[in-house]
Length: 151
Image 1 (cartoon, rainbow, N blue to C red):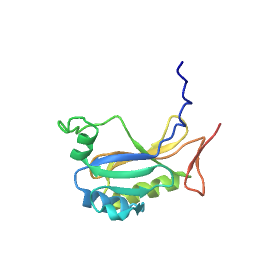
Image 2 (cartoon, rainbow, N blue to C red; image 1 turned 90 degrees about the horizontal axis):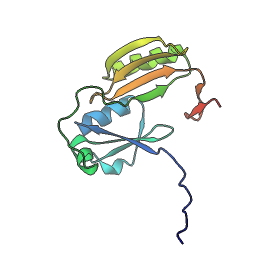
Image 3 (cartoon, rainbow, N blue to C red; image 1 turned 90 degrees about the vertical axis):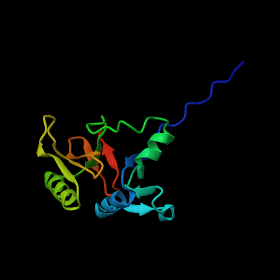
Image 4 (cartoon, rainbow, N blue to C red; image 1 turned 180 degrees about the vertical axis):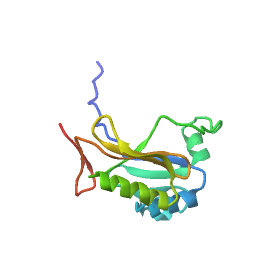
């Protein structure tokens, strides 16, 4: 008889972005204020403390090879994934968007009222990864920098 193994505890621990220019991307995310950790990895891979899951940067072609997916054609359009920077107020959304653009991000969508009662806008990092900057009902950011969801 085979024993059923207990289900593993689900967790999201790292989001890895494939990037074209490690040096430029590392500088961009440091300029946004994310604290780089494990700097001994140099430009081979970069890890950033986000207050929750780790943000990692890895060369695009090597990430594709590691995941055994084709490197090309490289998507130049929406990839079906966004990252989010949740805020505590509309003013914070506006400030984060302005800050990101000042640090080299590209604007995607100006901040606006959402149909669910929130306020949101989008920017893209140097490789086109889309970030939503948002304040939304039922989603709060605590002093611990973690997202807390209403029941």
